[in-house]
Image (cartoon, rainbow, N blue to C red; front, side, top):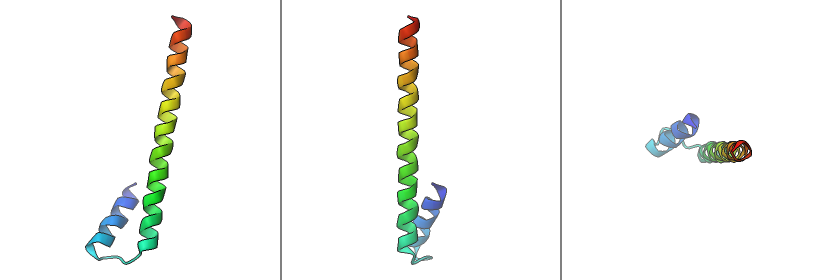
Length: 55
């Protein structure tokens, strides 16, 4: 994600003209964040199910 931020900042400041690389880095960061959110949600669901079984 830091790579995406750095590439976006470089592109915005005019230090880079690699729009394709910037967009790929941004999309990769987005996919990673969505994956992390899904894993978190699944872990919370599993925890809640375990708590229901023990109650």
